[in-house]
Image 1 (cartoon, rainbow, N blue to C red):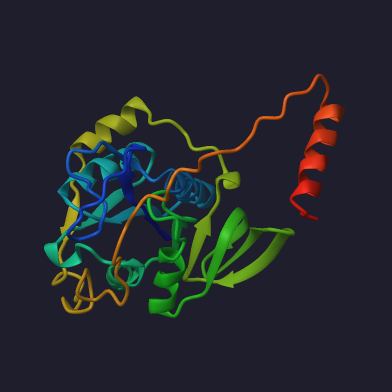
Image 2 (cartoon, rainbow, N blue to C red):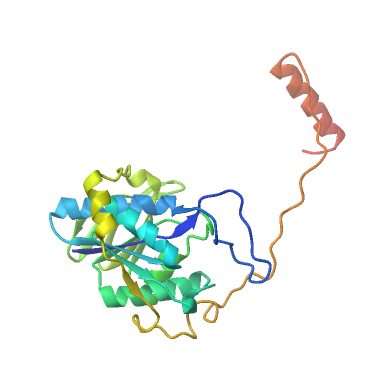
Length: 262
């Protein structure tokens, strides 16, 4: 079974800077990490391979040359191969264009299942995984917290919902986005680190995946960020001081009544 895990390299910082011209994140000179949710997808992909006793785990990411570091880290965690989608044509893509680019790579790899984290911490849209399935016209299951069964052509998964869990039987190939409840990611082994260091990373451009340059990256993005800004800091407020919580509650109720709220 061929298992593809889509990952993203994200800034490892709370000091987020925005390019005032492109309105995109400034990544130059910022330390980056594998998107935390994607670490669970990598672990699950390796566990599926171990459970079946065959197959391979292929890591795919779209990004600049520096994203190779994330791919090597994924290999150190048990993945077999890695593909970097790298081209200026891919730059500035929104979730639609990004998922289209990744779906073109899936057509070339022809996996049995695609795994991804539920969302990236820099964008928080949770749209790329479902977007890949949309472009490929494959089934999808989101917020997967457990893979009960998986074999050629089918999988049974548990999805974490707001009101509980939903059990789905999904035809494969399919796209599954996972949540952190699915497993506990392992640490890289010394053997894994050595293998990752020597691994050959495959690099594909838009020509390699037969992607139309007009439909990927910034050119192929139907949405754009027009303006970014920080919300104004809240000012004012009042601290209620009392000897007990009960007294504080009474004071608060009185103030609410004064404001004619409730």
